[in-house]
Length: 312
Image (cartoon, rainbow, N blue to C red; front, side, top):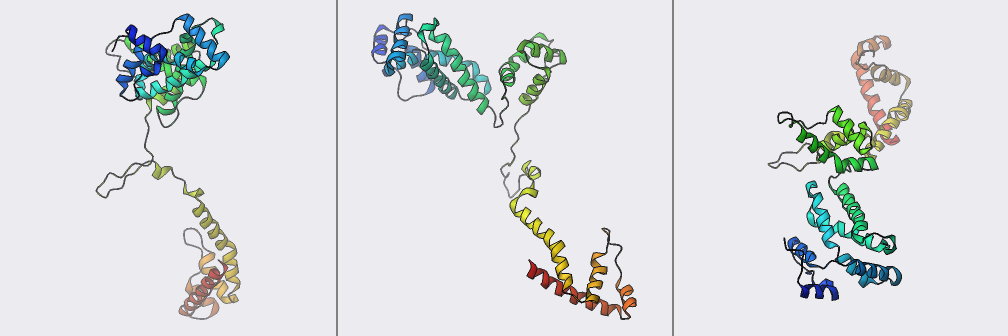
């Protein structure tokens, strides 16, 4: 890492045109090297530029305040590299927080900008991590945010105090949960819930096919509820209408004997298929052959299908 001390020539250039020190293009290391070469402002300079921004809306003064504190953003962002997010993105979000702090900074409050800006820088980085650490947001309330950014480090501290043979344990004990809840001023059940959220991984609902003509199977296959799919709902409603009003209308199109045969053969049956009259029973009742009853049934069913088609 390049030394934070810059040459007098570089300081002179930075004070007259700070943007000339920061390269317009380059990798992250070049950016970090450049911002560490920017000179720090004295207390008098910081007060003067802050008042020019507040009283005169001087954007050049705002730029000098921002540039002189870019190294603070770089230093702060390093504390959050353990969340697996790009360092450049963390720095970018921290810079947004720095600009918000500069805009709201009041030089008459008696504090240095570095102390005031640190809160805004961390707030923006925290928000970025919570939005992008996982697809599903894991912390929304104030207590959950506090647990998210402190629970892992506290668990590491608990492991360091354990014997080597017990350090492999990942879950917190009840005593440790009580300690975390007491120190962070949250409820024990909130600690348990956040530990569960942090220990659980993400599952792809609709995985990509593995190849070779195989079909991937994911949770989307059994999580989807087709009952409320619009097409399925319309089809179900249509079936219900046909099964009630449609059948009643189709039966009215039959003569009395055909209607009774269809009713006894197809409608007066139990779920297990029992209860309806057989062809021979109906044949004996009407004094005809079972074959004749079957013919009447076939003709009646054909007529009903036509009536149902017209009804639909």
